[in-house]
Length: 391
Image 1 (spheres, helix red, strand yellow):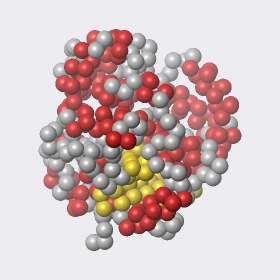
Image 2 (cartoon, rainbow, N blue to C red):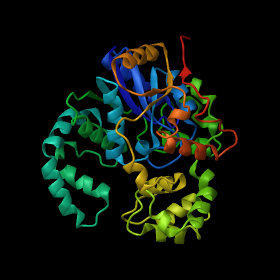
Image 3 (cartoon, one colour):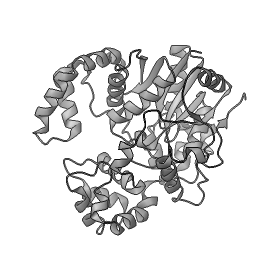
């Protein structure tokens, strides 16, 4: 079966995503569309506005054939590590083409595949250049920008675009494999990633979330497929976890806090100091922000704190990770049947006792996610993949 892969969050699924799925099918003539989707906590360090099952169902109702969950330890990461995990999953599945959205205009199109090959070829030079930049005390994003401008001026078109930066990370990681996937970048239509204003039919996920959380649901009706709009209830945001986060930070010893993943440079002392003064999550992030610690970096770190994800959790990570199936169509089921016969992938359709150890961090994260509202259903035990059959 000819397959195309998408790396997604769908937070929430909107018309731009539907356009992306449609174009991916059209440009690849694929038999099956596979989405590697972040679970209940996302790349920029925030909880999903609706749970992973609702987002998987939205994808299946709008052109995706198979949804596989990206584990939280891979989902809540900077661009390079997020790409490493996502590309690993697609490569293991034998996907032939990766399609992603980019904010770079068509007239300034980037050859992502060529960039990936060049980045691998110049890896030693890049690492040497990075060592020089470390002495400048610039934040990591600025260092990456300098590296790209120095070695790859042709791709240094828009470093304010997360989608473009992720695209470069995907391309670089993809090029490491013996058989890289073909890459197709589809320019976004309508609003850009950071745009918070609403347009007629297309708006960014950020703009949609802002209006939904403000209680302005009707304003975004035209920006979201009708199959998705009705499911937008029990909406979740970081503020729902602030008291839990505050309790955890205050109650644990500083030495224990220092063991949290990505907790460096004595930041645990600053965190325990500022949490006492903060009266909301937004207030805490504003108080913690420095030149070296951006909003996104802080949000990721606070996600690790909330979920109590420690440095040792990453040292224990196995290479052969399970593939948790969230949903499929008939085409997706056919693809899975073939892969189960011809690969050594551990597919999990229903979590049981045998899976607790290998999925412990995900299970804990989902249990904490549920604490935001009693309306959020059980996220793992007893759940089976969503099946979306013919209309």
